[in-house]
Length: 125
Image (cartoon, rainbow, N blue to C red; front, side):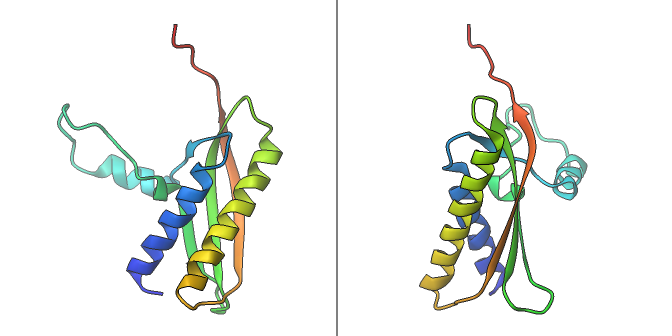
């Protein structure tokens, strides 16, 4: 799969993960956060935004036999972490396999879900 295809795969995985109830967001990996911090400063009118795909890592298995996808998510405190992580795993796996199938690719997909933190509710009052 080409770099463009990998980018699309990341988007599919991010969209599936963010659709799960209880997922507050995706947490970028440290390397991505450091790269963003080292980038030239932005003007105050331009908000800092990290693409959701930054919380997804997709690599080919070392033997070329499929994909390994890591999802790093932040959960809402009102949801059970284990149930939400399992739901993220299942939905991302289903979405990625479906995406690959539409391109005529039938490869194994391994999904790892890491809960990086649980976000506390913020009062709006």
